[in-house]
Each structure stands twice: as structure tokens, then as C-alpha cells.
Amino acid sequence: MREVELTDMHLPQGKIALVSDSTTWEVLGQQWFDALSTARKLTHIDLKKRPVASDMLAKTIIEQANDCESMIAIGSGTINDLCKYAAHHLAIPYMVCATAPSMNGYVSPTASMTFGKEKRSVAATAPVALIADMAIISKVPRRLIHAGLGDMMCRSTVQADWLLSHLLLDTPYDASLFNKILPLEAEMLTQSDKLREKDPAMLRMLMEMLIYSGEAMAKAGSSAPASQGEHMIVHMMEMLYGEQLHDQYHGEQVAVATITMSQLQDKLLLKQPIIKSNHKSADRFGQIFGKKLGAKLYQTYQEKLLSEDQIKKMNERIAKDWPGICEAIRSVTVPHHRLDMALRRAHCPIAPKDLRWNKDRYEHAVTHAYLSRERFTFLDIAAMDQGMRYWFS
Image 1: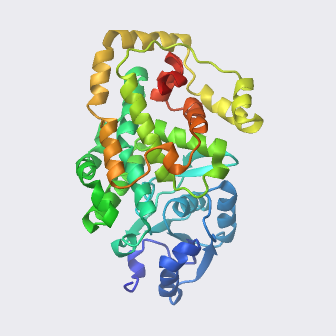
Image 2 (image 1 turned 180 degrees about the horizontal axis):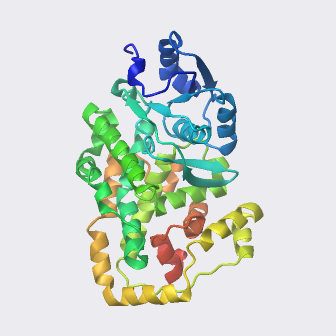
Image 3 (image 1 turned 180 degrees about the vertical axis):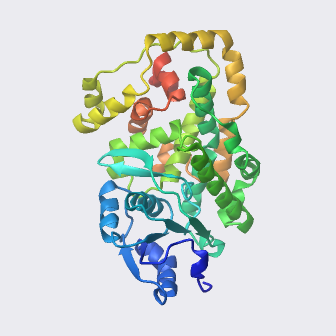
């Protein structure tokens, strides 16, 4: 590693909290600590092996970094989420040293955090700087590359859901946020097989796509340009069966859910739906999710529960221009067979069985995923038309 120039770090003078887990400490953390320790006061916060982005672990970081003026995250998804969340609560700047092309949240202003069993995207501090050494990135296990590819191949299902909500409910939508990603995606769709051999140009392209996706979230002020129905499916799996998913990477899960979501979208665009009220009682949420989690998700669902007037207006829009709506959505999506092939060529998981997920449990998670978040997606259309299980037939 070259000598670190402190003037280039965009961090204030004062004590720095350097955060890593046991793996990223060996990969990069020790080098950073040694390089900085001669000129700065440092405290090393060791998250041990395979930490989880939970509010409880974030509180530990906040306590240990309480007297620090800045923070450096050494790692990717979980460590970055924990640090940006902790930095936000401490009101201090942080920078991140990437160790894998495994997720798109490096530069986003949100963190994906677990509160008990509930997974939420919450406000956080975007980094003042991101350092990604491709020599480090190229040494990662292939599963981390799969995770990054999964987090990017969902662009299609994300944009379809986001546009659907805009066309039916007039919610905000900005297609320009995908402009930097689309040319790279087109190339990735045809050359994803090169990721198997860690081709330097393709790894760099993947890293650029992940950064651009994070920038899109920053510009949108939310995770909407990067997380829709496919992420809701994954979050539901985590909430219901999280203890069985500890050895999997989030992006791998997103890859599987993206194929499911893409198939669902393709099917729904073939048939004009008739939307009906889908109110569920607080007791029903308790039966599905348990009393504590059910109560929280019930409150969340109320934020997007449509009134009879909204349902009437939505059905009028659908009756008036469903072919036009379908054409607009198809124009921004990639057919599921192309997504399937791109992921398959990279040896990325594409089906529940690839992650050893029980088929019935996965269908249960997909069926109820629309209840997990306030965003309106094709999952809601399926549930409010003929019920989700119909679409598994």
C-alpha cells in the first residue's frame, strides 16, 4: 500500500475510529492502522467474524467511537452500513475503504439495518470519500462478486416497480438516475461470464456500476432507485427465516429474488389486472409475522394502504391505458430470460434451491413480501388482483 496522504483523506484532525471485522483487518485494516498510527490518534473497533448490521452492534460502535472526530470503515456491505449509521448518530464524517465489489451502498445516504427481526433502510451519513483498490478487489472470493452482480442485475426489476408506482399513483420517479448504469449493464449482460475469471476490466465495470447505483440513491434521497420488490422478498426471507441465512450474502439473495420478480412482472404485463381492496387486520399481521413484528409491519402497511377512491382511480387508469403502461415499463426492463442467462453465465445463484431455500418457505415469503414496506410494486398488483399464489402456478 502506498503511503497514505492525510491531506487527501477529507477527515478532520483528531482521533479516528477505524472499524473492521477479523477478515477485513487482515486484508486491509492492519495496513491502514499502521500507516495512520504515526500521525493520528486511533482506536480500532474490532467487529470480530461475520458481523450483522444490527442496531445493537451499531450502538456498540457508537459507544466505542464516542470520543472520535471521524471514522474509517474497512470493508463492504455490513461494515459500511454500520459505520454510516454510527457516523450519522455521532454527527461525524467517515470514509470507506472498499474490500469487495459486493454491494451498491458504498456512497448512498442510507443504511440497511436490522432492528430485532425487522430490516429497514434508514437515514445515514454518506462517506466523504471512497477508496477502492482494484488490487484488493480482485482477490475477493467469487461469491462476493456474485453478490455485487446480483445487486446490479436487479436494476431492471427496480425500475419497473418504480415506474409502475409513478404511472398508477403519481409517486416520484426519475429515469435519468439510471443513465450512467445502462451502458455498463448492456455490456455486463453479454460478458458476465468474464467475472468467473475475475477479468480486471469486468471487475472494474462492476465496481463502477455499484458506485453509480449508490450515487443514484444519494440523488434520489432514498433507496428507491436500487431497491423495490426484489429486495422486499429478501427482507421478508430475513425477517421470517433469518437464522437460516447467516452463511449467505445479501446480493446472492437479491439475484434469486430478481429472477422471481422479473418472471412475475413479465406475467403481470400480459394481463390487464382489476385491483381490489387488500386490507388486512392487525390480528392477521400478528398471525403471519408474530405479535411484535406484526404490529410494526401493520403500521408500515397503513402508509400505502389504498383508499376505495384511490383504487377506483387506479382501475380507471388501467382500463384507459394498460397497453401504454405496459409498453412504457417494457421499454426500461430486461426480459427475465436475459437476466437469468447473465447470472447463470457468471455462476451466480438464480433459484431458491441454489441457496438451499425451502420452496414452500420461499413462496410464503414472496406471497407476503408486499406487506413489508410502504413502496407500491408489482407485488401489490399481484396480491390485489388474484392473489400471489396464483402467479406461482
